[in-house]
Image (spheres, rainbow, N blue to C red):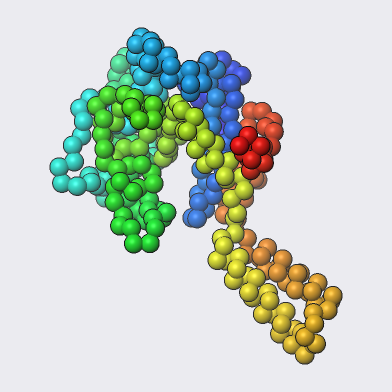
Amino acid sequence: MVLLRDVILKFKRGVGLFGTCSGFFGMVEAQGRGTLHCHMLVWIAGNPSPSVLRQRIVEDDQFKARMFTWLEKMISCEFPGQTAVTVEANGALPMPRLARDAIDPRSTPGPQVRDYRHVAEFWDAFRLHVSALVERCNWHEHKMTCWKHLKRGEEPSDEKCRMRIDGSTRSCTDIDPETGSIRLRRLHPRINEYNPVIMFLLKCNMDIQYVGSGEEAKAALFYITDYITKPTLRAHVGISALAFAIQKNNEKYETADTDMSAEEARSLVNKMVNQMMSRQEVSHQQIMSYYVGEGDCYTSHKFRCLTWGSFDRYVS
């Protein structure tokens, strides 16, 4: 996170990769297999509000062109240097597999400027290295998690992928006429959004989105802050723990009267709490993260709590 904050965002250190960062809020999530990844919102100084942005894009062609150019430099949906749309003639393109004797680019250091006599040579090597990383990290192949929100009877398909990788392409950035949101250029149907510099530095999967409308802002806010209250104990595990505690408590007091005594009630509560706590899972990645002084929440400011339900009822 130090690399992201001090080198990429350069918070309070000047102009960073995206511009002058005025704030950030990030939550760390542990996946089922234990690996950690961060969901983060970044505020850029001078970025217009969604309503102002939409108005300026409609009224000012020069601003629109500059905005689209900046977005296409910051967020890529194709390989570095790609200029033509990749066409899928026979279904979804599978991710190329590494040869048995090939070295995974994620485990190799990237090119260094000092190793090249001319800067142009470095940038050629940079693009080749990033292309190899993108192929390994950001080439999307559908998995069951893509369709975990499907209703009973619905068939998995590109269009229903919750990661929004549906095989569609777009030769240039434009505006959605229905929603007014910005639709970024996408020359490759299977490459998820990434930033080339961050890919070069972090060598990991990423999904970068520009929040350019009120609807997108609300969705991003809900999605990221949802991890603040995400339970580490899965529902079915918790229910089985409670059932086991009740069973053990009944066995202990099976000869007692039908009415539950205070002692029996206390015993039941203790057993329920102990069973729930014993089934909490913390991955070794999470433990090591805390050991080295990292945490599960990264913020530039002290944010106030907002009880959304009460707020929504008040304004409605």
